[in-house]
Length: 404
Image 1 (tube, helix red, strand yellow):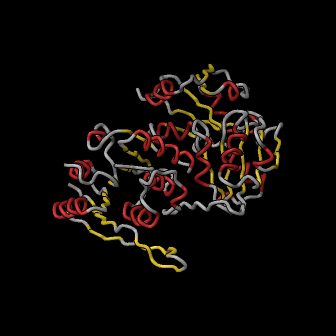
Image 2: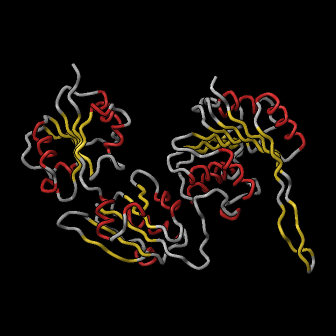
Image 3: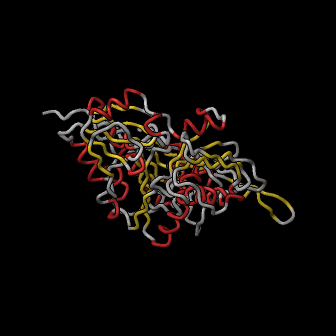
């Protein structure tokens, strides 16, 4: 028999009183309600069995996705489809197998309390993820709301803001939003420090302009000094051209082969919040440095794999795009990368040596695409005068794999 649709009910700090009648009827009609202890304690007028989320929740999510014979409801905080369990289940279930009853999200309530137009505010979740995810959005003039977990959530966000140079910005800690115990604290990351907040809170940040703070936009081509590096770094101008050729797109996966300091994978992720990337680097110190750069620049989700390509590519999910920044002269590397690409996938490879350039010529002869020679010069001091100083020219091969 087809299991009954799963009811996913959003509930806020206002509890049963804040639910619409349809949501209440859905909860009265089921035999089992799954939620956190805090959420289940808010229920009234129901006779269903209560089941608490285990830790980790994966096994129970699998059970719910497979379908249960009993009529079941799942409680979610606020809007279930916004960083909630509803979104997790929706990735596993067909729409007809779910009935979603949304509640105003903490994001919506926060924007209402602050008078911020929601379309002009970024939302980021640090629930189950490092607080460094906020660092990606620390640009002057940016307003953001961060979801956090635990009493130390606001302190973690404030710490990242201070490290990102916006410690004097407006910070608002919003506790128990929508409930009788709602409280707002307006301060700055500098002044909040390491204070604890109510375990149920969100954080709003209005990034100001701090003199001397670095400008790290989401567009490709961050300053070279944004990265810790031992010199293995795709330089700013070439990096911007390379990212343009790769074309970050929603949900797509990049292999950054010979990642060095990790800059290509990092800026791929910064440009598109839903994209994914794996950085492959042979040297342990460079792999560690790439992971540290990713965390500091707001994309701790960069997966760093230490190992030498092409062997280190074994077992990886097929990518939508590949960048080869090191090791283009390695026998069979470019062919291995080309064969791994999904249909429609892009490959970009850079070389600075004649031997590397020869490999790119061979790749173009085999697979088509375009070759570009990138030459950049920068004004530099020569004695008491100024002259152009050229950096090593880079030959770039870019190609797209057709459907096969």
